[in-house]
Length: 389
Image 1 (cartoon, rainbow, N blue to C red):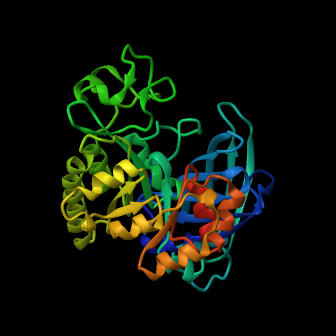
Image 2: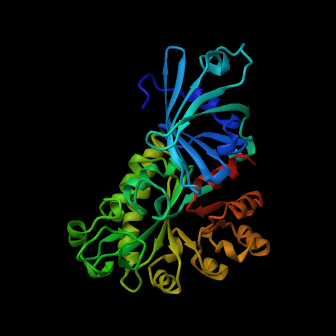
Image 3: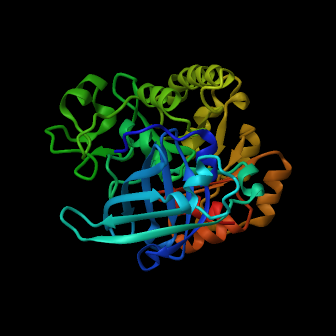
């Protein structure tokens, strides 16, 4: 990783934009988007095979350097990546010499796996991301905290560790799955049962809800070795260790008063984030309760002052209206429902769509300007299509 002075805010801003692959287009496609998606990491988003680079930057004298890795979600290829900005290829501009008109070049190499051969890659700055795109409030939402287990990710789905790196994939929000343990602790876990898809071999079988939180912490590890986190641990990580702007809670446990157990946590951590935002230490954060089923809908209706709860109604627009939901979230396979979308928007609701993973349809839905956010296992391709508009 780079050892040197960190880049300034103005240098980071100068690097952001749309680039062409002068060299490397066969592997990564014709264009790339350079974006600082977290406090320390620069991401290069590309279209071909949903490939992306995650790089850390440094400056030493007149040299700007970027080191990290690249990953292709579709082809499962990956390796190390290294770039430099040459002095006469944008380096002087980054140092404050505005008299030099040359575009920024990112010249580097990528390799593939341990011992793999290196290939040259050159990215040339073409134009900035359009102001209208930057000013638009659009949520790139990472499913299950960043992606599902079948994808080549470094950490398990719904782990704190994955939440902490989700911004590097272009996300500015996450969706996480919430269940209730036998002793009433809200935790992050997707499936109904402890199973080989999600956890390492364990003598514990059956529904997660049949075990206490101490039992799960003692005897269960997620597939890549992490602990099953409590919802409070996840909130703490989001508020204090990321700049994520939205958390969508997909509520899984039904019939056990889940709402009354998580609402105080939602309120507490929303307030903590607001205090940090007032101090300029992070962006504002919204934490919203998903309403994925009729059972959860009925439970919310029983909650005092339920219309004041920040909800995402995944069912009918009528249910969104009854709950006074901030967001209506239809499933993407129902198509671009322009009439219903117009109604929801006229009522002051945002519109999210879930769970959209196909790149072709992702581009169509982004370009339609019908949606305020897209939930996907591949936030990197959602972010790419958003920024290249």
